[in-house]
Amino acid sequence: MDKKINVSFEFFPPKNQDSIQSLWTNIKRLEPLKPKFISVTYGAGGSTRANTHNLVKEIKQKTKLEPAAHLTCIDSTKEEIEKIAEEYWDSGIKHIVALRGDKPKKSNNKKKKDFLYATDLIKVLKKKHNFKITVSAYPELHPDSSSIEQEYDVLKKKIDLGASKAITQFFFDVNYYFDFIDGALKRNIKIPIVPGILPVTNCKRTIEFAKKMNCKMPKSLVKMFKGLDSDNETRKLVAATIVSDQCKKLLNGGVHDFHFYTLNRADLSFAICHILGVRSLK
Ligand code: FAD
Image: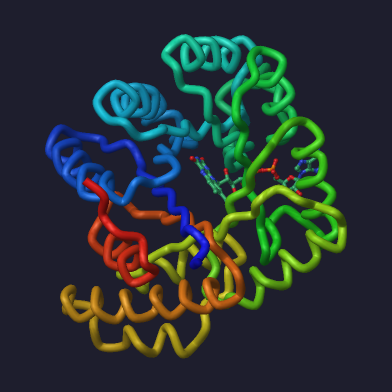
């Protein structure tokens, strides 16, 4: 029998009323695929933090989905994080994607030095309650890391502190992912390391983002989007082909868990799930 394929979807909290409406349409579209969880990102600059808390709680109240709240710790105090953790636990939110967050160019508050890394956050969360902790992983290295060995050491630390799952930064060349998994297995890292899949439709913006994130974009992929800047429909078709190809390679390599960075759009993730054999269940 074919092994079950698990999917999860990531959304970001919208800034205005119109986008909230559209976000819910997209969440509802993906709900019948029975994802393992739906995660909601946490604004690094602080502007959307309350929106994250509200959306996570709403998902819990209005749907049967398991919400996972992203939480970043950089530039926060221990008291702030403990308060958020307490509120989540009391609202039945028990799954946290624990992250450091990007270092702010200028710290808002010089006293907020309680957290240097995601590991510090995991310690505080686990001390408060037995949260399910998911963490980041970087097959192509985090821009602050000096070696792949550092990536594995940090991942091991996170696991020792209680992380039970990792989601990777997005990547396009599946070999980086497979090499990372091989290395993890050699180092006796046994938690699931789920590939983060980014369905690209806006190539220009993705190139900039990928550069910042240390993610290599194959020239062949960039070429496929050439001349399509003002042709949204064709870009979507091209994107579907690219992601479907990437996911099939992962599937053939034994991957059965996929995390989609939906960018709040259900269409591509929904289509890819169907291609992978994940069907809607009413
Ligand atoms: P860490 O794991 O803490 O690592 C950061 C750097 O410090 C790395 O170089 C690491 O090797 C090093 N390091 C870590 N721990 C130690 C240690 N104990 N000792 C020495 N060195 C150490 N950003 C947001 O703002 N909001 C989000 O919602 C969000 N969601 C994300 C979801 C996923 C799946 C991923 C992959 C990233 C997400 N990010 C998000 C981006 C993330 O916040 C940035 O990449 C950030 O720069 C690093 O956060 P981290 O938790 O990966 O950091």
